[in-house]
View 1: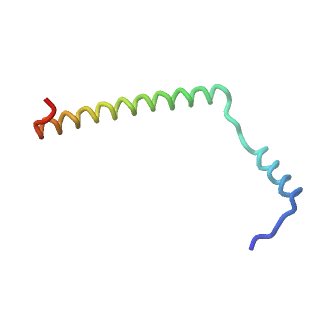
View 2 (view 1 turned 90 degrees about the vertical axis):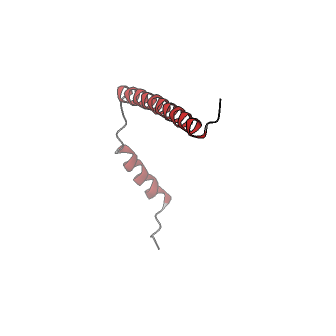
View 3 (view 1 turned 45 degrees about the vertical axis):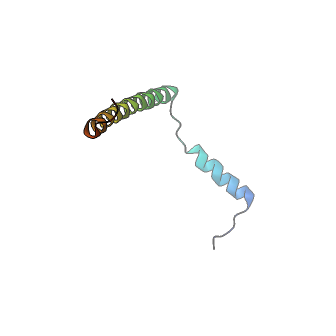
Length: 66
């Protein structure tokens, strides 16, 4: 079983570890956000096209849907 530390020591350790965090700059955050949005749009377009192609193929093979 792990050794218990008192709350004061725990908070000191948390503060020490939190000071090691390197936060991204505003520019890095903006670039990452734009990249995520672009990739989400590209993925949605890919799946839209793939779904339409498969739908057309199934309709053609089964002869249904007009």
